[in-house]
Image (cartoon, rainbow, N blue to C red):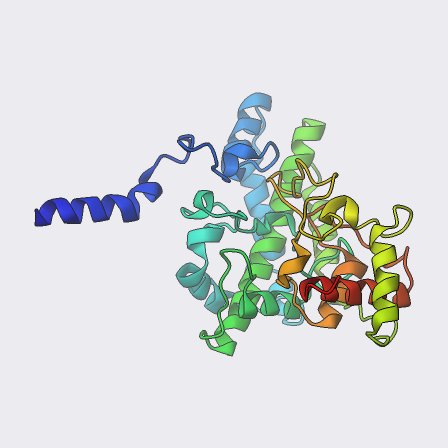
Length: 334
């Protein structure tokens, strides 16, 4: 009896992870790579390109990536841009804490990824959902640190508060390194597919470096200090929430805020995976639940999702009114 008990326990615990990555989920709800039409495995896509066009991209791409982003590159000698001492330490921490979900090359395709929803982030496009920077911009180091530290409530991303602060900063630097190098490689392959030729790799590297350079990144503070959170502000926020000519939040988040708006069906994120609007009534907000966090999410949007930026279309007062109304939803006061 005892051997049978251990056999059943092993199957229940490890069986899902032993399933072939290409095998369909028997229940039909696999959130893995099979449901995305745009998130391709890099190595396989590179091989397909070289075979289809009989052009060697892998070797020159690896050489250029090493020259521009490797430990002997000019960037490695500029700690303000990339601190390679932390990169090396961060690689070890990443292997210990992150690789199972985010994958060895940061593509979000670790062995556990197909069993997780939302799917772990693919860093290799340079797109990070929760940032303090303007819409579409790369994150600050502090943004990545906050995500690692507090985790993402309502997802499989845990908090790492028990990991030392020094080690968390090391992980931040390695994630930045993986993301910028991966973005360069992915961009080069994308251009190669589009133009059917080897692109100018130095030019693409310079584009990526400019996107990630600390001098190009800034946090977006609230345009004005928080306005009074009173019934008048909540009423104005409710009107904005439902107004189809301004915020029109109800179209996605639903009239009651539970994420069931008429436009919410079949939403996909920037990586091609299914995504649903946030249920605002739970009070769980992955970018943070402080008033300033909610303001920033509304002002800058959420990269890689259908959530747009309202920084240029709404005043600071209007955004604060929306924040106050969303907070009232979370308190079930709407």
